[in-house]
Image (cartoon, rainbow, N blue to C red):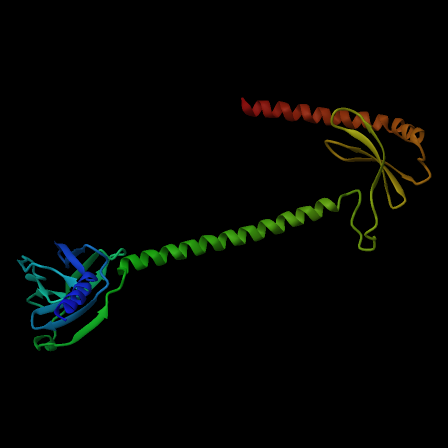
Length: 280
């Protein structure tokens, strides 16, 4: 029976964290005590206040040494770390009342005990025996504020991206509709969905421009396509019946084509000249 009890006790101690080191950092407005553990600390912290003494009990924490250290500070004068069965006591001695805040690091391998002075009142001279037993937060307040700020930043950026994508989608859709409603074939709600544009004849002028005969709703259009679209002439369905009629319409508009291509060439030369001047 004794062996069984010893084994159970051993398992209980195996779950407890061990205190490895401690460090004390003195500041003008506070004194911080940093504790380091060999495993993430998951125990509870209870606080007991008395006259000039504050005792913190860290459950499920083992330590095999007794530490007594004096501190040359107006806030905290001495600290004692002592083992207490399956827990460890951190005793803080001060001349004045202290505000004690215990916060764990994110990974749980460290604990910061921050002490700050508080105002002295009439009730501060009385011995206070209030027990506070709360589970230590897994993250410090600074880390919580940092994480909250990151979450808000990510949400704000995602909202901006959604608004931008919605605007871009509407812009592309409107441009697509405008391209469909060209100057030559404007959309008409009375047109049936069966209306189609047919290419009857096509003749190349140069490497980029061509003359095309199109048929749309019993009308035929002679159009120059390429660098720009130019409506040359409009015919009825019976005006152009075969290739010879198309060649005749092409020759009749040849002068207009040459003049337009000449103007376009001059504009291109001017544009090239301007771009060269800008480079210089």
